[in-house]
Length: 88
Image 1 (cartoon, rainbow, N blue to C red):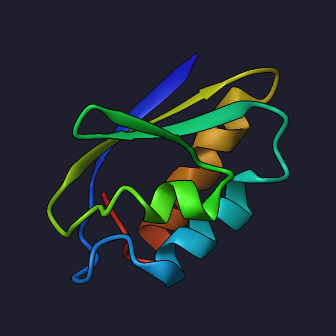
Image 2: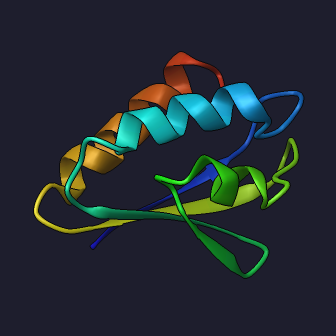
């Protein structure tokens, strides 16, 4: 299992656009990818699941990937977080 913690730096938090970017990035991977915020966990391949968490700017989230391509999935999340200034 691969895990990484991010602080959301996007000024509006994880609203529709950043959620869509992250969900699209992890969907092709075979691994299960989840995001945890305030003790709640959501499937990161579900835009409604991620948006429903109401993640605000400055929040700390954990992203976990578990499966055959878990390292690649976390690397892709990391790339999108930094490239799109969503989190660090």
